[in-house]
Length: 383
Image 1 (cartoon, rainbow, N blue to C red):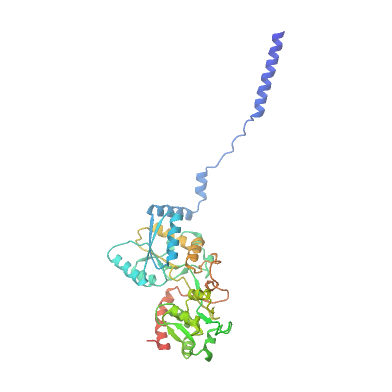
Image 2 (cartoon, rainbow, N blue to C red; image 1 turned 60 degrees about the vertical axis):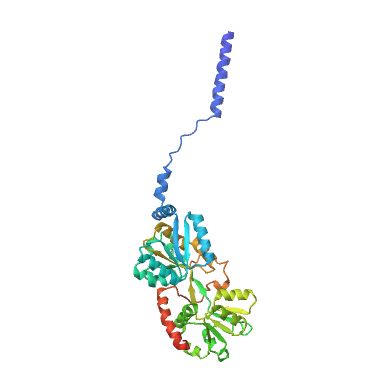
């Protein structure tokens, strides 16, 4: 009887222990079937993404990119640092005057030396000198990123091609305000149009950069003739403007009141003089002005490049919002992209709504400039 009682109690305890254990450790539900992540990710990847990843990897393998350029010191340092940090590629930028770079590159090609990947600088020389000799490759096939190809991202509604063969592309489009006034001698709002410069009051009181020699004076004159016609400038010549080949001196003369008005001025120098307290103001005539990328804004791909993937990587990054913002900040030029911030730029360096802007970084204008130099010499009697 006692044995039976003890057995019953043990049996009950065993049942309770097993039940408690089951309550604390419920059997997990069946696992849901999982899709293969690797295969799914691969199938969702766009073709351009695969190409982009391959270019980045191959660029890292190449480890280097060589560029011939005319960029300033700040732009040079910024590009080298950013490219190394983001893509682990060493960027070598060889800077010299345009004529020297052209001579060096042509000499290297003649000797069978292929050491450079990209040409970055002002527009025109590459398309006029290098492309006809077969030294450049069209850029279309190297642009991979949809962000870079998005036409709506650019202020003209299209990429800023320099030439019809698409051998050169510009990314900066900063306005050049062509006219400066000494506000002690000219009231604000007194000059709003080129026609205002024909007022007899300003005879002998205008200085301008030489429109017959290579430089900003010639670029300005080429655009202005397109906007106003040669007859206007024949009338303007009767105002006896003083012609200078020293841009800084031109700015200084207007700042000090030796001349009331300066044409084809260097906007950056005007801003610096203004910060120093000079009575200066920049004026964009209602007829319009031009935009340019300066010496940092245009890129070309050299054929037989020793580091082709690094070159592709740079070109695509150069055209993105991120690349545009870095270049714009370093150069203090406005980007041609409309989505790049501008809060770090001076108001004078910003395109304004309602103003007509002519892009001078084109092959068409490069060819006109020589012709306009001859016209300028004839109109103004320059020798």
